[in-house]
Image (cartoon, rainbow, N blue to C red; front, side, top):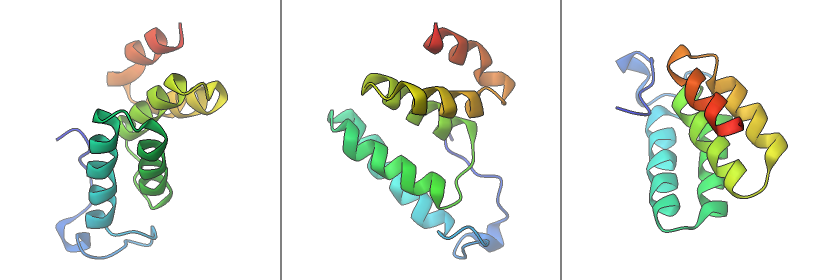
Length: 100
């Protein structure tokens, strides 16, 4: 799973103190992916932002929204999100390429 959380199963329906449940965050990510695939980048960004603000803190989400920010000209936001993604070694090379 690309957007897999490290949460325990008992938190599936709870918020875990993050504001949104895992199911709510997953729904937002699914909606964001759908909107992105249809070229509705602004709306996709809104979904990813809500999921991240709701407690989703994984490299894949930061990387994806970083690329969307780049594509929509939000360079400062892109750099911030991509640097968060780069904390995960699996994304470092891709982040360097995106920022080059």
